[in-house]
Image (cartoon, rainbow, N blue to C red; front, side):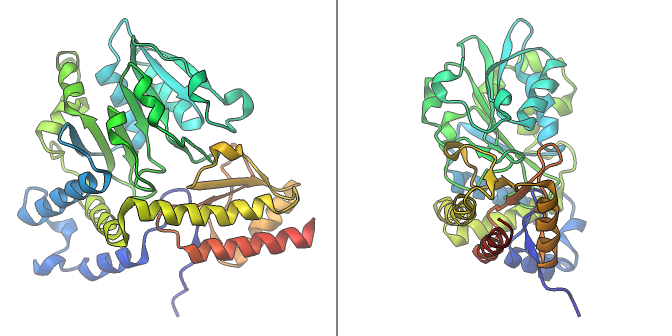
Length: 368
């Protein structure tokens, strides 16, 4: 007898909507009566081309992206973008500004250091990345090649809340939004480049979405000509993300997830649900009389990754063991931080968060 579906709180690859999985299951062997799977179709054929274009159209529609931007489907994850961005936009004699709010922004800056000069306009590392720096503490310059931020920090459970002050920065603004893209509406026009691995809110691993201003790429065309063709954004713009064979099944799955988001009510509805889910778990932390201690400051709390500590390592192990017995998956905190982490991306249902909240309440009452 097949095992029931569990409560999936994995940080990524993460939960997918069950209805999306059923669509993929139904179409796996015979996509749209073509007699073969979408995985078997040529990426140059009409069947896949429709999937490709529909995915782009849905991204633009749901995020309200205007014609100044290109939407690209690339490979290599966000980690590849850590290098591709400075290769394309960090000229000799300029510096890139990385706002450090966690391990992924550190890794992005480290990769850029191999290519050019960088500095950090702000960092919360000294306080164990428990908060997002206030805008009035972030140093920027009109001479920055670009300012880079990580919108949501999966390991530490922090997130940027308000992007309005970005308009005051006089340099291009780039953002790694891998773990919270499509979780709420964002002002895309405040950014020059956004990138995100799909495996949190958009689908399975394998495809990376890049949203980039055309005129930004055009300004750096001469600079980028020294790069191998596959490393240039212009190459992928001109090739409609088909310069090399794209991850067709991952893009098909992403298109199906995007259709689900639209059918559910779009990004405003995703935001409403995510706020409700996060509130359940933060309530369990706040009402535990100190038994659970959240990692992040209240003002910087993530809606996607709720992180907390228990009083002892022994209690943490017991919590995770009992959670596993109750069919919770993925609650181990990141190895660099420890504790517990619940990743509650779009596809994690309210019911799973309600069951986890009840488990947290009962465990705290039993052991404090």
